Amino acid sequence: MNGARALLTTLVDAGVDVCFSNPGTSEMHFVAALDDVPEMRGILTLFEGVATGAADGYARMAGRPAATLLHLGPGLANGLANLHNARRARTPLVNIVGDHATYHARFDAPLQSDIASLARPVSGWYRVTARADDVGADAAAAVDAAFGPPGRVATLVLPADSSWAESAGGPGQPLPRPGPPCVPAETIDGVARALRSGRPAALLLGGTALRTRALRAASRVSGAAGAPLLCETFPARLERGAGIPGVDRLGYLAEFAQAQLAGLEHLILVDAKSPVSFFAYPGKPSDLVPPGCTVHTLVRPGEDAPAALEALAEALGAAHQGAVSAAAWRPDRPTGTLTAETLAAAIGAVLPDNAVVVDEGNTSGLFVAGATAGAPPHDWLTLTGGAIGLGLPVATGAAVAAPDRPVVCLQADGSAMYTLQALWTQAREGLGVTTVVLANQSYAILNMELQRVGADAGGPLARRLLDLTDPELDFVALAHGMGVPGRRVETAEELTAALEASLAEPGPALIEVPLRAGRR
Image (cartoon, rainbow, N blue to C red):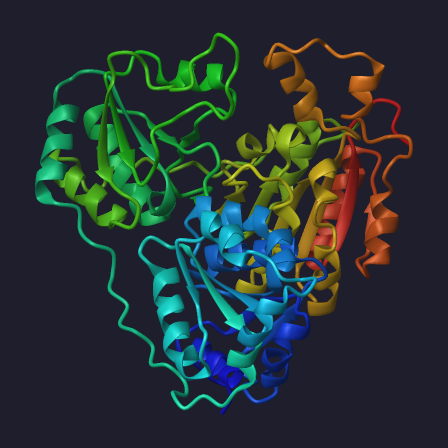
């Protein structure tokens, strides 16, 4: 048994049986070992940013890591943006990076690079396995580190000779996997006292507090204490829809978030960070907590959020049946011109039960969350780290993790071009992803930010850097080139019909929705 086979066997035994891969020469023994360990599903991606984003989406839905396989430092660098998003989402991910053989490094070959300096900023755990005998044990440690809690990116660097040499150590034994630690009773009592004070308070939820069990307990707390529920602007995974307590997302724009938080004297963090502005703006604060507001941490990342919220509800004497769930409702099927509003209504009118929505709609998807609040229960995955190019890969990984669930990817046109290669993987794997491209033919959010940061409104040269015309992107042709059926719609009625048709058929599809005057 060589190191590569020991690695694959260890991963599979530890519950990691999917690997999103873009390999090179240093990883060929890993590739060859797939035939010896067929339990590992190797999925080819055409760009490393697709591999890392897909592993993120897979873990968000599966609750366990996928692996990635990347080629040396440059391959890792190509995947860094979505590893950054995965780190922000606290996603469990085993990131395997092939390297030159240990004895080859001193020759400074063209692809030699400083892998550690690239990997460490996005990794919660990092190790280089220099001997084949250690591969199994190190792989088991990587899986353990990825699971956490909280979840994190665990990067294992595997030199080529560690992969091809005989491994006397063989596969590693999966390590015990403890559950999340309980929140101390004194922490719950302290938060309960703050909520009983009668002073204005709110709960800010994130991470594992955004699943149905935790949301029900949080709703009981909210009702008992008169404290509204808010959640992170970009949640990793939010369970929502009819029958599930709703929660308002904190606004992306700092002034909107400040309005939501205004007047608070107590802010309770539940697996969430204290809110800050996404960017610095001249003359505006970075810290969004209102002056005089005390921030309390009920649940830290990795702690048991549902149990803590239930204990807090009991401490407040909240009724066991006190959770307020979202009512079932849908918007009417829209007619007429395609706008951001009619787009939202079309999705809300037809979103199926148990869907997974991956939202990188950015500016054009503004109204979709409101239009789907009463849709059948579904999951909502968002751009946790702000590095665009996440939508298509995360939808790909989510569809691999949940093949029996329809996946709808709301994808802005500008960010779609970062990782468009994900469509090819969707076609090859026959994944049920309906991609809705919101084509406003510009980096619209940057047009907004141009003014918000106090820059000049921009002349023709500045505007040209934010414009996606001349030539215009043809997403139908791009989809066909990747093997995915695509169509362009021109009216709200056509969009609704196209969504229904795509959701009723197996395999991927793309719908281009032009959302700008003068569209073709």
